[in-house]
Image (cartoon, rainbow, N blue to C red; front, side):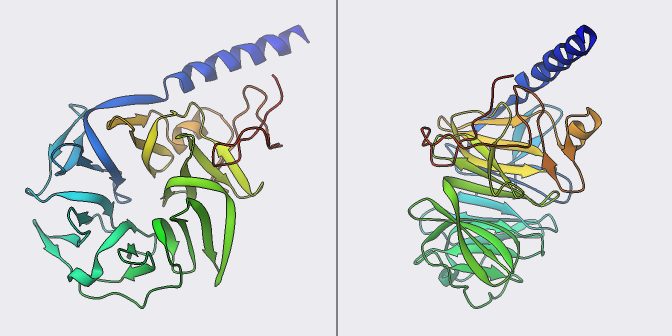
Length: 296
């Protein structure tokens, strides 16, 4: 018995050391971040200049990308091409070889993301309806989701939106459903199909499809504004426009034995009494239901 508790204690200490170091600051400042599903390349919109920058791993900083266009929101399509919304109206611009090309003004957007289906999806600037862009020249008829300001998409039959009142809604198999909690930003990890949100508390949460509720990201920061995820690695911008990324990915958790179920793309953290059995603490109202765990 003593051996068991000693091993458990050592495991707890080891895991805490990893998670305590889970977020590292990158140089520079940004107001939005996106990750390429092709190779994990990270792009940001600079906080001051509003220019597009690409992360340089060797120097841990960012280099300006493709000219002097000024942007609000940024996305990367499944083929690695960068899309963005311009300042001063939200006109959608996309990467065409080594230059930027604009869509017609009528395609202006509040937000845009790359879906796992290879299309770019946006929230229409005027009314927030969801629109898919199958190529650079035209868009499909808008789907019926007015007042959406943030979006995360798998495909045409499965996507999430945050509406103007910060409520979360999911369109799945032809039906809209209101989801638990509220959030200010949302992202889908295309590699694992997991949904991440920034709650009203400015913490990052992951959707637990089995429990039909939200799990807090281990060692999440509490000053997050925007979030992007690729293969379990999280990048975010903060309230003071700093850029952070966590230092573990889905593969890191698997190799370390931390309970990441690759088949179901589900993270189960076995520290601090956190198990698969979640309870909701009604006294904590941070916009997304806060799991309440027993003491370890």
